Amino acid sequence: MLAELACFEQQCRERFPIDEAIYNCPACGGLLEVVFTEDRMAAEEWKRTWRERRTSNRMLDQSGVWRYRELLPFDGHHHQAVSLREGNTPLLDAPRAARYAGLDHLTFKHQGFNPTGSFKDNGMTCGVTQAIRLDRQRVACVSTGNTSASMAAYASAAGLDSIVFIPHGNISYGKLAQALEYGARTFQVEANFDQILALVRVLADRLGIYLLNSINPFRIEGQKSIIFEMLDQRDWNPPDWIVLPGGNLGNTSAFGKALRELCQFGLIHKLPRLAVIQAEGAAPFYHFMQKRDEFRSVPEPRTLATAIRIGDPVSWPKALHEVTVTNGVVEQVSEQEIADAKAIVGQCGIGCEPASAATLAGIQKLTSTGVIRADDDVVAVLTGNVLKDPDYIYRYHTGQLKDPDGNAIEARFGNSPVVVPNDAEAIAKMLEA
Ligand code: F0G
Image (cartoon, rainbow, N blue to C red; front, side, top):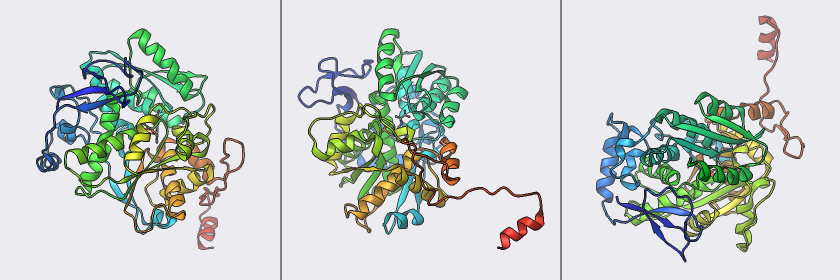
């Protein structure tokens, strides 16, 4: 469909061409979003087409993002799409996790099954495709690790140069390793995510580098497909709740927009409620939603879930809108709660990285206060793969994990490896005990 960029601020709503390389409204500084300028109601036809594409061998059809291209702003540019066959992530039933969280039933949508192991690939395929459309050779981002891994991979696949900025010492080695392996020029900056974002915006403007943080509206467009695919996999039956972790709040913005568009175009008739979960030491959105007065950033965010170690989330005005429209909630969880929930996701045979486990910890809290009911239909989105942060896992299971204040995190579901002699007799005795 034909599309434009629009300022997200309701008092402004200024429109701009879809191929203008801007990240904020030049008129008022507000966030930008893509708006469709056609109003085509083709719900049943789209549902049929999208289902048929699952059996096709065309790259565009095989991608779990580009399969839904009718609701993406790339008409006339599909031949430029850069895809690593992202999306196509499973819905997994998790009875053990459901019991832990006080639910009758719980489903995970596991975005860690993506090519670079996180939900960022859903957005990055569109972000890098927009860079190609705009004829940019260099792309950059600041990242807590997953965005940079994803951008590095997609940029290299497209033959672009990628420049990655990460907070020195505060991302997992798995993610840093990916940026290096995929060939990004990687700068480790002695500052936190929020400070580096300000720096990168200056550099991008000065050097004409295309910025691929989630402030980029085309990343948000791609991430909508997580919801499109989830609903498609559920035969278009919306759940009661969709639960996700909140960091920079790009994903919350994307999920809300996707749900609104599905309603607008007649593909679903009920909005699920969004539940956004933050880590206690990096929870500015949670605190804001308690009173809804002034948005106050957290100057020094702290959490072992480094993916969501963000104190000044750029997309909070969008997230506020989406949580409000869906009658959603925002919750915060402790380091111990995240660590235990993560071990439970592992015990389901599923596994995820720390930030993703905030979802299960959050659900447990929300069922205990009666916000989510035991018989509610809940889908939790696991944002990253279990192998993203093995160091955290080893420390938890061996009782060595410490929170950012240095307090020990209890290995309540610990599973420590045992060192044994090379002696069948001795090992047999231990196994029989
Ligand atoms: N989960 C994971 C695994 C993440 O990597 C992130 C964000 C989030 C949740 C939060 O999503 O920012 O849209 O609210 N990671 C970014 C990065 C910031 O740089 O990789 P959000």
